[in-house]
Image (cartoon, rainbow, N blue to C red; front, side, top):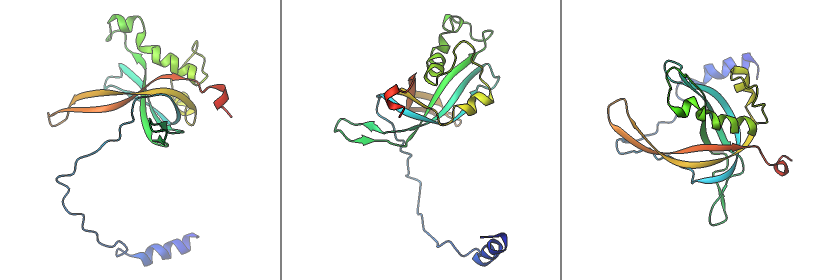
Length: 180
């Protein structure tokens, strides 16, 4: 369809193309979140990687959008959740002037980063996190564990919120027999 045809299509379609649908009240609607059951050795494809940081930039993480590749084997033998997206966060920076506890001084906040870099076949001796690195992660496949964690926070309106969330951790490389 060239622009001439497209312009005619848009002009001819007008505003009466959507049939009215009465949705009704949404006042009783509550959000239901899909939570993945705790699972080990889940094959995950990195859809997107971005930088996530606190307001002053003193704490930074790689924010990973991960798609479950093959599904998760359920107790009844079926596989579920194929293609579902989970989120992973890998800390790569904590300002030593602000984060002074032993955990940070001993660089323990970087253990998951080390596992992640090894999982993607990176060189842990010379890793640099930048836009190019984040873009290079897209479509790579890793194996990791998914667990559940209770997340508690205060919402903007002041109410206390408690949610069960998935946590992706223990990144590993894809086994050689799976790389076919």
